[in-house]
Image (cartoon, rainbow, N blue to C red):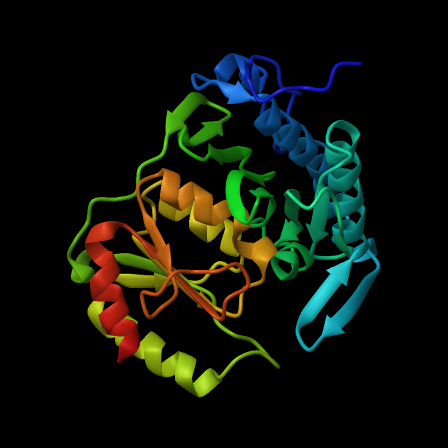
Length: 297
């Protein structure tokens, strides 16, 4: 079998349907933007994992749950979803490395590496809150070149490739190119964040910074799934996002979405962001410097 190439293709597997909702058609018919073979593989992997996640989400009370650390949970659903994503990606790209939240890292060809969060928003998932996602990023020679974030409940598919833009597919609309918002006034900005929970971070320092943000912006949202915070920022729903202590799998796909949608990603001091760094700040260009100033206190 000839291995797939990265040229645009027209076929993609069908996504699972959201509860009570019928798709208007397979994603390939709804998409206006050409997708490479690599993006197609990533979308198929996300859709495959979503099938079991949606089934498990309806039976959360029966899931096996363990605690990795204070306030840090893992369920059988996380583990099963990661195995599914790994199997789907390995089938077409067996030489690529793999870094997953639950299964750790598998070394590959030294050039390409999948970075995967099979269930971003585990705590939401386990409490029956319908806000979680599958996040898949592809790193090539230290740079993220492709990203897919899929929200199974809303059936929204966010995806981006370096140099080709960022897009969202929804059940009712064809691919729409993503653009960050154009707001420049912090008093009109809606900011997303992640609040450190038990056993994580410097709570006093975080709340000092959060107080500064709440005093100077239109509002702050904390939904508990960093990948979707990035995706919503890329879509112009949020104007800025900041958080501390995120892992590479929390950020990989999302940072590319934001950059390809015209936004900027750095640490909270404005320095270049590196995967796994202690802090991240993402926003449109007009708000980036003001947000750095606010977070500096």
